[in-house]
Amino acid sequence: MPKIYIVDVTNRDGVQTSRLGLAKLEKTMINMYLNEMGIHQSEFGFPYTHHEKNYIEANLELAELGVLQPIRLSGWCPMRKEEIRDSFKSGKLKNVNLSISTSHLMTEGKFSGRIVRNPEENPAVPNLLDIMASNVHLAKSLGAEIVGVNAEDASRTDDEFLVRFARQAREAGADRFRYCDTLGYDDPFTIYRRVRMLAEEVGLPIELHCHNDLGLGVACSVAGAQGAIDGGVDAYINTAINSMGERAGNADLVSVILAVKKASGLAGKYLLDERVDLTKAWKIAKYASYAFGVPIPINQVGVGANAFAHESGIHADGALKDRRNYELYDFEELGRGEPEVIDTGRQITAGEYSGIKGFRNVYDQLEIEFHSDKEANDILELVRYANVHTQKPLVDDELRFIAKYPELARRIMTMTPLR
Image (cartoon, rainbow, N blue to C red; front, side, top):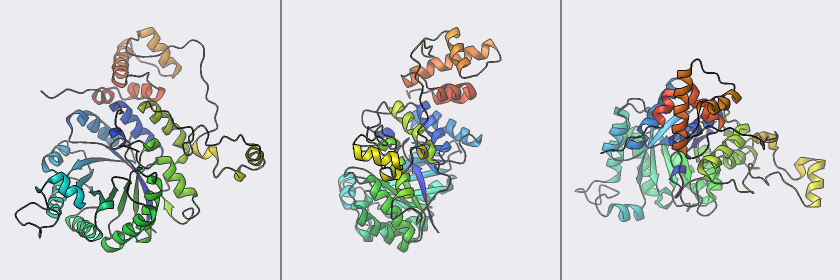
């Protein structure tokens, strides 16, 4: 039976949240945590952009070292040959999603007659079908092992063209088709019908990329996945941690996993990738909140402060007698329940202006020893730069990462502007 896999897009779409962003070290930690959580794939950035090059290549090296394994790292790229060639220059990138708009509205509004949808419209003008096919061929020729084809604004694209576009993608050698509800326009019933139709007509595994403009991002993602599986193909749901993303955000990672595992019409009927470890939910949600500088909403699914809080007499009494009366799942399933100790006494932190004694104290607390003064001073210098890089105190896992992979950390934090 086909399965549901998670492709997290926090490091690509989540970082496009207006007014917010992540430092490259923080993006690396997100990849580490996603890997720990058993997430199938991280769309980890834009491999053709100059300022991401060091981060992209260092993370691909972490994959080669077995650190970022078995998670797959995939890049996102527009369907432009120059950017695709640039993405594969290092020879290390193996997975990519290529994107182009497919709706009448976007084709006319964005391309202004320079590109048409079908070759029959105007043989003298480039058309979407040929552009897409030639770009898939190019990515494959450059070493891509998995190529996904994104239909941007698929939810406002007519059925006939969407099927034609997806078929052409399959014939060109694409491995997946990404159905993008770019404006959060779909509803669960419509997306189920359309995705099932695509699955049955085309036969490619389908990714669901749903935005939350109508508050339906999770519902549409899950319904679309049902449509793909009922149509006989694997489903790949795009998520973002804490629902980060443009405008109202993307489908929330934890909510999607809980829906597939717990919802009445899904639990036990649709198979979720068995590697997903929900006990890492609390850890990854807290880190993303800290890194983005956005508090977790009090009523956030699973990880909000009130997700397991009860005040009304009837609810409190019922939950104490049997949690199943008023809780659909256990807090332990999400990695919650352990007390969190906050030190209210003396604290020594490592940052931009740290000296060697304070720095050594911080690493002593982490039980990390240095073999020489030179090694300690080298790591201290990296920690200083990391503090400038993230503009916030480093968490323990960031400090551990820098000490364990200093040369890769150096590359991740290095950006040289183009002249």
